[in-house]
Amino acid sequence: MTVAEIAEKLNMEIITCEANAGREVKGIYICDLLSWVMSHANEDDLWITVLTNLNTVAVAVLANVACVVIPEEITVENDTLSKAEEEGVIMLKSSMQAAEICVKVNELL
Image (cartoon, rainbow, N blue to C red; front, side, top):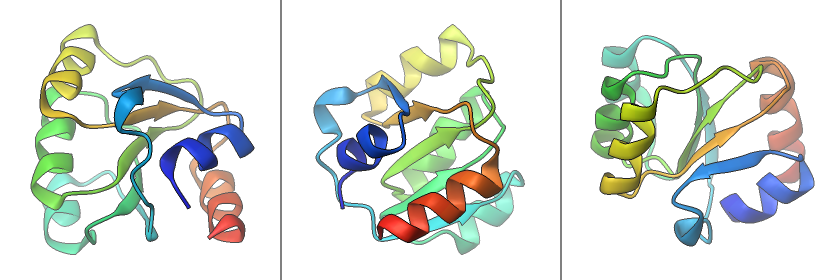
């Protein structure tokens, strides 16, 4: 299933790189410890995190995740959004809590 399909089905807002939202999602990863994500997330995972700083984009690139989902309508800094656009990182925003996102995405995959 693609990022765009997941976003549509779960009423998530694509906030960066909507043009890349045709990327396939193959798994889910939830973590807020960036060093842990770098060493444990799989390529093409949908990564759920509350972190919204520039380092989040760098880790998304290094781990080659399909997208980054920010739960609970957390505001993402403008610098982070700009860097995500520059690096081609798809970011989504959701009103759901991380656990709920995980369960619902898992049902779709």
